Length: 464
Image (cartoon, rainbow, N blue to C red; front, top):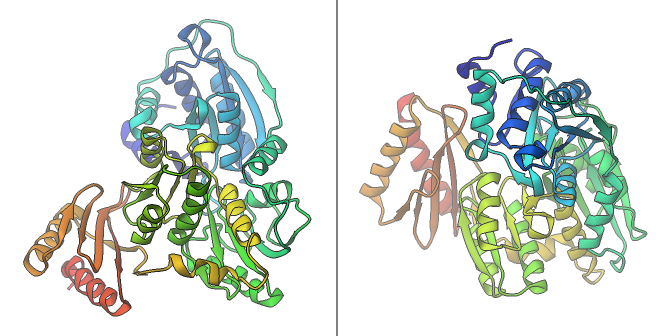
């Protein structure tokens, strides 16, 4: 089958390949992508590459068939395919980092059941995004790939999940923590596969929810950034009087937390907590945070002698900036947490270990809500998306509004950010849809509501 650039543009996103199976992403596209992956990354040994590709998949029903097609493409281009089977995305990153091999993870993360996709990595878990090879892979698939004339590669299998579990536990020690009752909602995703292997500690009483692997997501979507998908977890935390609740997304590279009162702990607060822990271990280090993370993160980093470094939204950007600064840790508002000791990659499970350790090291009377209180210093809007005819024109209108009404600093690191001592606002266009994304934070709730309502009125002016 021949694929046009226009068709592929719908599937090749900024950080991965993703679409509906089998109408958009299917075995033929994946086969060609596997061949192109070998060529663009110069994976064959004669090109100086490692001649091997790691391939893993999540619990989606289409995963094994797509893995088989991708492996066939890799082998037809003369490289070896190593199948590591079921894995979380951070499990694939672990394998890529530990073995220093390129990899492909078949997952559509938190998307509904009909989707599947591929996250690609260079050796050492380095991301393959639009600016780091994904564009070239797409273009090669569209152009057509020359048949490799040498010997075909072979396929083998290698289990990595127990090494993954041991490695994470070597980074965070839970052996001396107090007893904790923890509810974990895996959402029928890969957290149900990895959590029992990682969290085998005598002082953890785990209440499991939806650990059965089921890519049809019979209970709720595995997307904990949506409040409706946390309702079951919040209810169970209260029912069993748990100390903490944890929710993983479908491929378990993101983690969200709720306290003993079933209230969401913001990812910004989690970022500040882990940053403080990592700075105690290695003082004077850099900490990365994206520009829509709370100001509290930078404040906590400075208070603990670290260097806060602000970056754009998106894991490819964060990983790149982390390497540039040799940052020990980085966090995002979306529940992604990145670790230098994990090849600068993100791991929801490693973040969960840090939160469990931080709570478990406290005296018995210290709850997670008490512990997190000092990281919650501002009021945030959360992300509000508005469909607009032209994100660029609407952004200019917002810029004019701020210029006329406020003495605010303006920067364009990612979209437009307007800030004063009392608040900040960021508006930025979606990479994939005609949406303008709004985020804001302020010292008081009243001020937040005032700024939010005034700016959204400007954004939605065309709707009148």
